[in-house]
Image 1 (cartoon, rainbow, N blue to C red):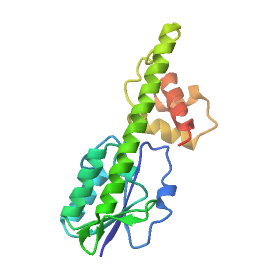
Image 2 (image 1 turned 180 degrees about the vertical axis):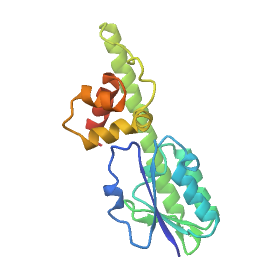
Image 3 (image 1 turned 90 degrees about the vertical axis):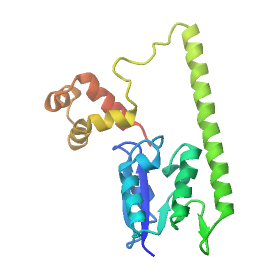
Length: 202
């Protein structure tokens, strides 16, 4: 049995160490830096893992938690079905349970994954609802400014686009924003946003 471990972080400033704690020396590691909203089959390392599965070199995959596979329940279940159809066992570490038992689908596993996926989707929907309510209140008070100009990209996309700025910021934490902007040939505002995103605790 050839094992693999799939890890995912949303942006380059996040840490992989927590997901790698349980990895074993004989596991092949696939690390993606991509939003959880991107379907598994569209991710770079997700595609590499699927190719290895189809080549018959992988038949056991571990993830730390279900949300590493996706934020959307449909995408998670589609990925789970793909693994099952290809005879691949999926283990979710924080659940301590595997998708197949004695070569047959584990129905308890699928039920738990479905429940967790539904709960996660409800939490995101509630969060979005609270955000919209907050915006409505801010608008009624005349203090809502809307999205800042030039911020149409999400944080992961922004950091990916300006990864050279991320690199210089990490390598030279003591440099001023203006100095970083000069050596990376970007605006002061871009450096400020990069530093702001990187300062957020994941």
